[in-house]
Length: 368
Image 1 (cartoon, rainbow, N blue to C red):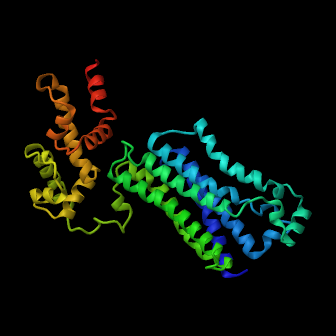
Image 2 (image 1 turned 90 degrees about the horizontal axis):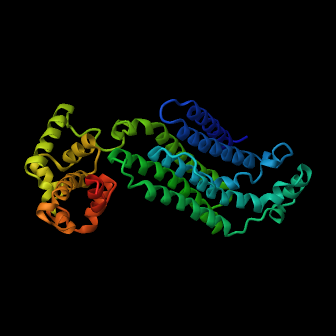
Image 3 (image 1 turned 135 degrees about the vertical axis):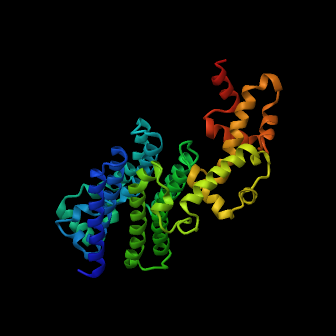
């Protein structure tokens, strides 16, 4: 047994341990923890499959029935990611439509099933003779479909929930890191397939790519663990030492003082009414550096700069809408009056902070 196999068996052990920790974890919600437990366990199983293949034990009578069982897993990781994020942000458990996620893995199982169903002796003989693909139907282009599906799930997850109303600055950053961890895994996998298919790398070096995959899965597990802290108000900068703001020189006392100063400026000077307001402009009003001003907004209000500004604009817009019987302004006029430079950005921001478009908001507010 060489050092590579020993190393990855250690990763297998860690994966199983992580699965158990997620199952026993009390913080956060149990459903989300179980999803991550399943995710890490399946990953550990795939690593075990690789170890058995590298050692040639996979092709013995004891382990032959595990051969190719990792194929369907490639199309299961993405749906688990989607369901996990959906549950964290919306509290949604399984839906009947989630059964659609099972179509790709069951499709792969159906294609490879003639091989799966062989008896032990026949399967060993088939593999030894190099005739696996006489039974397992998996066209050469199928792997590219799998890779496209993996990236599709990453994009689906981020663009479905990236604008969720519950997402503040901290939570949005968490979501980006979380989805990026899965995307890194998908990219490493795609890179390996590309290099091997075009004979730019010997297939025997796949463990190098697997090390990268282990790293990204580890990152994803890490962000699963810290999710409760992020969503309960702990700054992600305090969780990730490599994220900015760790050493800005802005003390807690001064930071709090600047927070109150910023609120006074926003309420008295109303700089958000300027259509072209930028972070540098606000920094000058605060008499702070650009970085420190951004820090105040992000940490104390859990908003990005533009969301922070737009929240004040939407607040003014709501007041104008409620009193519009007197001023008779159009929606477009209201958008410009509160600082937006176009109708589309006004509608997008208004819906983000109220969950309604302006007319629907007015209807539900007045009961008309």
